[in-house]
Length: 87
Image (tube, rainbow, N blue to C red; front, side):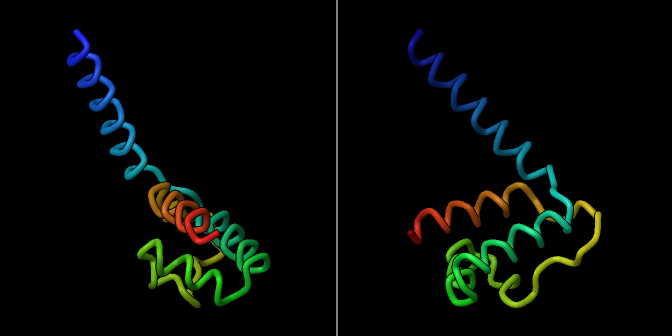
């Protein structure tokens, strides 16, 4: 029974990760977050966090200030994780 519970928990975690890859924030919100974090961490600190998150393409090139939903939950989570690991 315990093995079945572990399998169910693992399946749920994989499903949640899959859903996160399919959801997006607006570019405007992502840009606001990135610029606010840059104000707090400085340009070099934010660039380091983006590199740690494997999002080098965002260094010096934040998303446009538009309502389009193009910034993935997965990228947002990766940035947050990189900031936590960096500090």
